Image 1: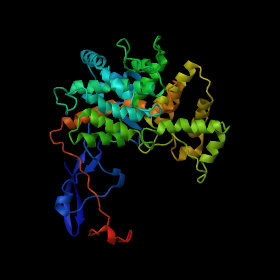
Image 2: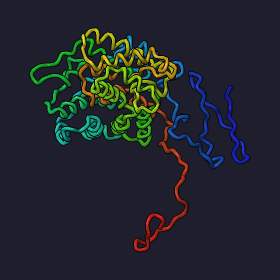
Image 3: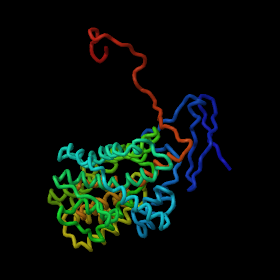
Image 4: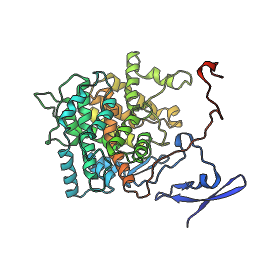
Length: 433
């Protein structure tokens, strides 16, 4: 039975229908509020606003639940591959063997960039951030394929999606090589998705880098766990741009820019910077932990706590186990990783952190795993972008398939100056004039 919510505005009562999701989340449909009452809602930062109905990902932050298309993230981390998970997110179901083979074949088919794109990389300074290059080159790539410049249709969407998902790792690897003054390494069909990316990052011109299985698995796990996370800043940006009927590449490039921010995709980079600062100061982590408890110390634990998860981040639990196994397998002896372990132990045992639910989150573990894999810090957010690409594509497709989709156009409450008038320059007396 449908329910309604009632709102009284200036003596006028408005009845608004409620929308209940499949996991019993409840939303109030306010779409007729402005036309009926002349008022809008104000929700700074959209913390209480549902911008869409989506069937891609479900999160319950109170219970620490994350599911892609209904499948618990724990099951996917244990049993799935990144390519299979990408297919699940984009198309809504786990692929059959023929579907997976076709999808994998398309990723191989479209993994190379147009050869002329090499010259675009030369235009960037050597100290350009890889995220800047990634965003620019995703946009530039669309220029080389006439069909990609337009919004995809249901008939050619598969090609657009496969080209973007495959080429994002090629662009990322090329941008890294460019930043280090190293020759470009092309993808090879013999490698699978994650191994191919590592090959392009670390191979020499005369000798291929053969990544150990545990290294490939650890990076693939990071990709899987970052593949989607509901309506976060970058995903909302992709949907915002897509609502104008911009093409898939343009929408994804906008998502990269949103992800670049230190409050979003840059968080795992800040974890490593924190560890470096602690090590540089001669601390083993003990002094930093004590300072983090002091309100006015200015010290803050990066990679702990989460805006959505009020319990343990389920992705962090998975990556903790993976990091323990990886460190044991690689026999790593890194003082910064030792500091990370000390911080982790404190957060999981110290009542100060437990009471405040400041558990290690996915950014903490992904950061230290990528350091263990010798991935440079400036590439951390790029790795995040590669992992998040299936989610962005899935949300783009969701809008493409929605016959009722329309351009996003948020409202505002204007708080500026009331009626004002133009004053000729010779009569202006300053700000007040």
